[in-house]
Length: 115
Image (cartoon, rainbow, N blue to C red; front, side, top):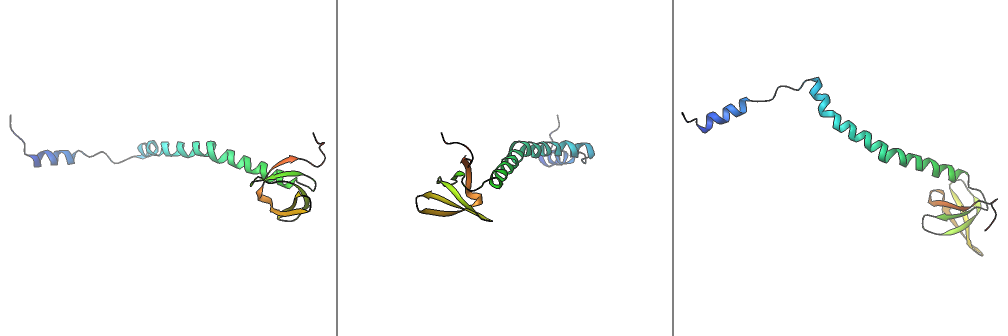
């Protein structure tokens, strides 16, 4: 059995290259990436957009007299609605101005009865 030199083995190994990628192998290589982006959209982006739309709708429906809670955990009642903020009464003779985006939830609407 003849012995091959290391140089001959390396040249034979290098000569065995893969064929040039064709259109079908390119699609096969891109398919996992496309599926990953589709999964990210349906699992992360779409629910976040839905939540943002619901929050914007809630903010547009707020009026004076609604009880709210801010993202900082402050409970209060809206006394005045301005263009970009609310004036909120948090205690007797204590009013603060809160940016509209910092209102996280409505506790009670103005027309609803107290329980």
